[in-house]
Image (cartoon, rainbow, N blue to C red; front, top):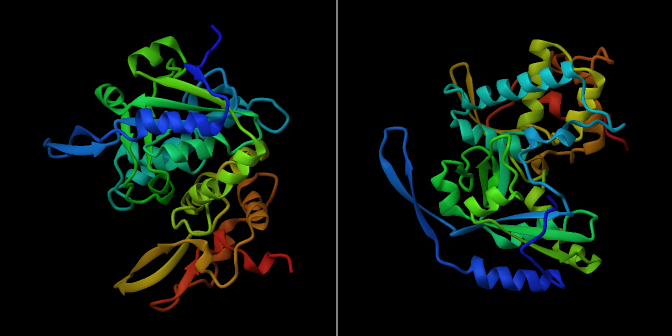
Length: 341
């Protein structure tokens, strides 16, 4: 069945004005959620949530169930062994983020962190801010954009709605006023079933070069790495994973490098407690030398890929924590000694 939007507009501005008046200006909805202790607590969320897409995609499914998600540069799919390795990596990283001795995230919070920093999950991204959705709809090269509008109450009724707007560890979903919809493998948000069941409406509009220029800075702020203290988490833990489990194939390495931010894991030392170090996480812009993304990608390639003998752990030789108040990055994620110039 060919997908048809609910309404087409002659311009992005006209679509924005319509969605702002029809949906975004509505008062908040009150949703009840169950705490770990079993108590129900009320939470205010937008009545409607929004999703922006740049392009006329025929379906909208969660990334982990989209075959095109796993294509490498030559257009072929990752091999079966690579797919199995990736599945283990995602599962183990999610477990790491839910560890009570580390991040202590709930399962869906851990999935939300993986989702927003490059790995495919069972989650489909939405936002409570219509303007953010339009920024994403204009963020590519396609000449057409779409914004989906969904009832938050109906999504919550199916126990598939995750509020990430106050994520305890991830800056990007907080910045994006993000929500997630946990979707089963069969659910396509452009299907008649999903559009009816979740009251989803799809609106389409042309995207001009002027639209892109106008929304460029907004989009850049939503996905910025240099001022995001969470941006280096996945890269750091993938490097640790490789050190413990062994290197990836060159194909899987390249696939990951195109998705996972090549940002440093950066800290400000707060205090020392016996053998433990208490730190505040920082964005990479506080480092004495600005990180160079292309160089960082290259160094992670050496550490992750079986085509290279370099080990990230070698960077830790003779390394020690600096004094209280110092800013430092994990040496496996920050390589100013290799930067050009």
